[in-house]
Each structure stands twice: as C-alpha cells, then as structure tokens.
Length: 73
Image (cartoon, rainbow, N blue to C red; front, side, top):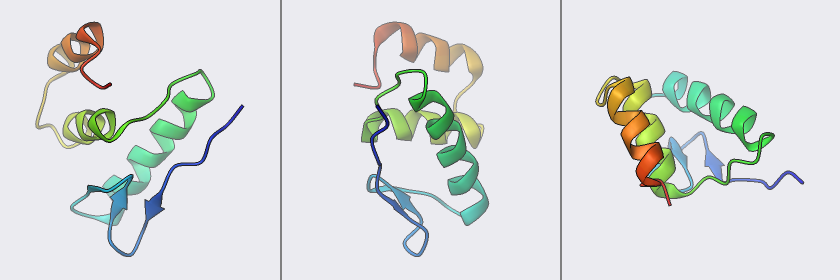
C-alpha cells in the first residue's frame, strides 16, 4: 500500500523538512517515492538524512552508517 507524504512546493518542505530549492526537493521526493514502493516508511528524520546526502552534507559512508543504526526512525 502506498501512503501519501506532505510535500509543499511553495514552502519547499517535505513532511516539514525544509529544502533550499525546488530542484533538490523534487529529486528527493522522487527518491523517497521510489523507495516507498519497496516498503520504506519516511519520517522527518529520514528525510533530513536523505536531504543531507543529496546536498553532499553527509557522505555515502555516513548514509550507510545511519541506515545500519536505523537513525532515520
């Protein structure tokens, strides 16, 4: 089953998580949507982690560590 998430293109937020620009918001939303079909249940913390990876604030290694620690919950 697919659940909707709150995306605000005016305020540039996904589930209340702020994005710097529309392009980053849309690419992140697309990635989240694809993963939701595989069972991913997004949380605001998870969206922050994905946003930080997409914008190069964290590395792939850090992303993997967060995933292993389930830091996105």
